[in-house]
Image (tube, rainbow, N blue to C red; front, side, top):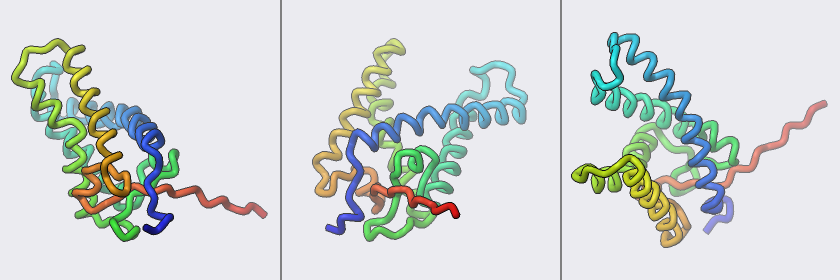
Length: 167
């Protein structure tokens, strides 16, 4: 295997994942404000499903656009890049497939807790437990990639910053 296509450590990828989650608060805030303003929603429970669908689309636009360019802001911070199996930049179609498959981080756990009347804390524990399991499952992939990347034909690689010479 090409050493340039080696996956970053699991700890680094998960640190990037957490940082991405923090950055998404800003995206959610702006998108939620825009949705509430345009739909004239006065109560947070009104139009809840429409807001969720809107956020799904906004997240998709955010990730597909940035992954097709190679990196999100969090990925730049952690020197990680998304490429296809051969190390080439991914297309928007492949980025869209990766986005849809990346919901495997949450959907199985959400589906498991939805039929039960669990408290918020219990749901969070189950969802975070699934996230940990999904992350650890990458250890069983031959190149240590996340399984949604393997299914999408993408991979995360280390992408050290190129230092700029100042003259």
